[in-house]
Length: 137
Length: 137
DNA sequence: TATATTATCGTAATGATTACGATTTGTAAA
DNA sequence: TTTACAAATCGTAATCATTACGATAATATA
Image (tube, rainbow over the protein chains, first blue to last red):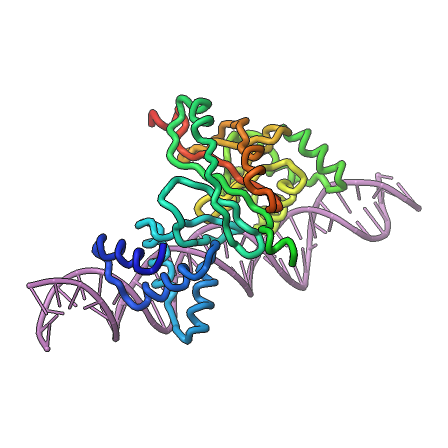
């Protein structure tokens, strides 16, 4: 997803396309892995842009709700990345650089049969390690 | 795993079997789902036992390291449960009561082939929802 | 361009977790 | 069974990510 597609989604849902929101979208569109609120703040400070925590977190959650960002949680902090696909998928996540690789395998079909009386609401399948680039360094 | 087995593990590794450590083990051995540090503190207060945060978290991490407790992370807090099995396994986790059901399916064999040049260090596969008991309430 | 609504700002508050110096406890050797 | 000492605990303060708030500013649309 790129910045313009994301802005289109915002407008369709009645949200305003503010400068701040575009700044945040610009950041995530140029990264290709999971990034934290702190990463985003540091990026904005380098651009000489102050930003409020309120604005950061409000928009990260909003973007997640409307499907612009995907999210995960690692070591006590939430991480976000631009949504790369409309298909259901999972990720390999590099422990060093946060970059991801899409995994199309989903074990839920097999698992559903084992949980007949359970109401399944969500699931998480993630693989962690070192990507090829980070193994060399 | 029960309290005595856990204490045996502690002693084997050279850790002392203190009253506090037994209190904590007693709590987790009588629960059958994921519980938070806060849950543990509340339990101890009901027993009229004060306890320091230092002691709580130091021991939770220790127990996780030596394989007495399993851990996961949900909504910004770490959760712990008594390790139920020495076999590699995953869990269904009830969103209401935290109780778990062991899942023996592991999709990693299939996935490893898709990640030939990636160094896999860890993975997480969890299913969330409502257990049969919580669906009725 | 005026207006109403939504968004942002700066900062304070919260909640989970970690850290610290002083004190206590468990263990094993004397 | 006492002694000695390392390890563990306590009470509390500090940290870190996140949430909340009242005042101000920016956006969309009429």
